[in-house]
Amino acid sequence: MAAKKPSTHGAKKPASGFTAEERAAVKDLVLERKIVWGKNRADDERVVLAKVSRMPEPDRSIAIRLHEIIKTSAPVLSPRLWYGMPAYTKEGTVLCFFQPAHKFKARYGTLGFNNEAKLDEGVMWPTAFAVKEVNSTVEARIVGLVRKAVG
Image (cartoon, rainbow, N blue to C red; front, side, top):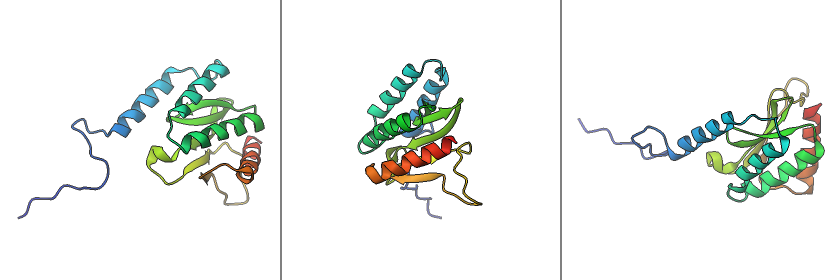
């Protein structure tokens, strides 16, 4: 009987059982749990922008632009990190977030909305949107979505 050949697809796991990406995600989560979000909005924003500044392009440019759009169009939302991603809360609950492409080695980043977002349209509606760049058309769509989501 031939020996089973090891799998060659996916990330190689070190002896600890976690990939570098998984270890980074755990570190992000520990950092996020130590922060008292909502206590000081300026500090929260600095933490979010520091995380964004370490993103590779084009995720960084998209995240910065999304932050500016959300901050301007829905000032009631507060920035925070959520699973290592920039997110925006209403009354402490994450309403929307940006999932950068590099985080999951995807071909595009995603602007996502959680259950609290008031995007309901009939019996089926989108809650995540692929974002490859932010131009004036995309910006207008984001403003509309964020304002609708806030309610």
